[in-house]
Length: 419
Figure 1 (cartoon, rainbow, N blue to C red):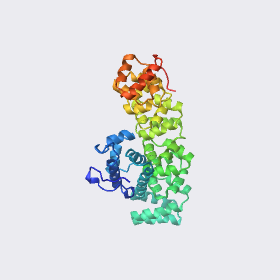
Figure 2 (cartoon, helix red, strand yellow):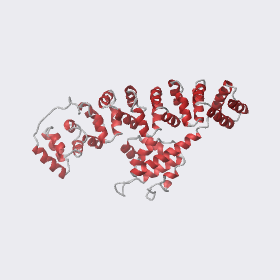
Figure 3 (spheres, rainbow, N blue to C red):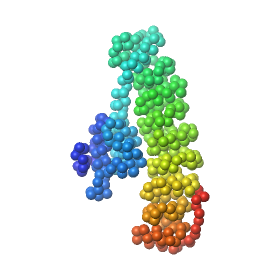
């Protein structure tokens, strides 16, 4: 377990312990401790910064800062990426997401006490709809003007109903009141009631709910019903709901969605790039290519930055070399170099002739000697010689020997496709 012995900020001295996470503020403090104690190349290095962590995780610095602030409950995927980026051992990553999820569950339970005015509206409608004894509890609770009494008695009323009966009453209520009603039910009973509703109304109620509770209900819905309801929820709300699901569960759900919906979500700027990147990987190769052809370069760069190098290479295959070049020119050198190792050599020469000599040399160092030599043999001799002079001596000698052994030829690649 990491400790805070080498923390540079005395405000955060203390053990790094997921069991201490009982409030949002404490979670923020623990994440800050985690970052301050992240392993560094040498003891002389400054502690890991949010900027560095953002660069390595692909999560915006503002999102990471919010997680540390202790004011906002971060999503599980943010906590997972945060911990992984701070060097937490693989077997400990799940411990931190579980700590976050325990906290989220506690927060959701606190939010299950709805506003008295909404509960009163629900109780009135139920009390007026039937003369059955359980429903009279609601009438008496409303007459007592006691919020606690309303909540407790309404809970009994709702639990006494079948899901189908409950759904019939939800249809008559304003969305906010119906959502408050759902929060009084056990999650599974709430999901059953949603299944009896018109799909459009179910989507409206999920939109009106707290995203964490909506995510729980969506996961408990029949899979086919969930797939029918999800496209009817506005994209911005959808991203919040999916962000409150375990990553695997969200990927399974969206991987079976209609392609038009998935494409729209991937390209929508309100959807976090990490989530959109997950969706992109659920598509078939030809579908991915068609989606990326209509995407802004900045969006594609963000998506690729959120993926591992082999995944980014998989996404780029099928695009024209011209489009790949345009995309890679906008990415940091280190990320481009790693991606190139996953791509055919065809597009490398064109990248070596664009930008600075130093950048070209950096890219070459991440290729095998054979691939580097093949790429160099397809560019002009002056540029080739200049690039070679920027390489480390050992690397340069190996590549020079391989260059001499390969035939020199010029080719044009901008009309080709990465396959």
